[in-house]
Image 1: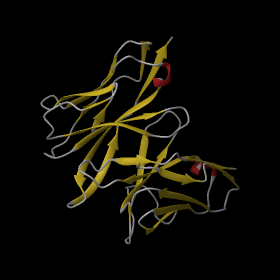
Image 2: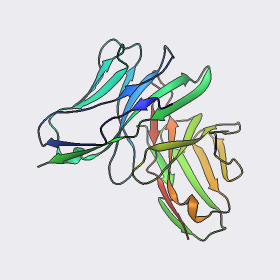
Image 3: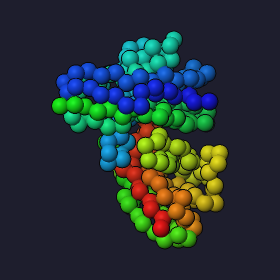
Image 4: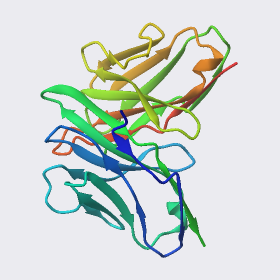
Length: 118
Length: 116
């Protein structure tokens, strides 16, 4: 069963506007981590932001913020003031398990391609 | 910080040959590294978990004799595609875990393998 769901295959946003990329997840673990990565056309995966399952506040990193709604199991990425360089593929990911108990694994969603229009 | 390199970035080989891809964590030690495969316009597919000093853990459906993984040191993991065939052509990307409160994975730039 798919554990990370990104329902938007593609999104368009006007430069300087904000955009929200959706992500829902499914897990029975109490402790887990949620990540967002950006993959430009060059192929590299760039870490953007992290949210721990026990974190009470939404994570923020510069123009990126994570709208974490635990009860809904959603972890949407908000990009403010979009720039042309933000055009890329964005992946939501969830880490289950931990290095102490084993089964340390990260699962990725299908991704959302973001197009920023000038 | 948290830089991961991968070499080579691009390789073209003949069918039947073996190809070795290196993944290095440059400024941190990584007891755990992961190897992924990515097909065009698709997500990352986890192939195996590479643990320093022990055998790799392969995901279901991944042939361990086909994709040999060696994690010889705290900064280096290698993936060898043995007897490569055209269907092995893909984008291979590694990641290394920076042990911290978040245990974030940092990715290498990827290796594009083309088997003729």
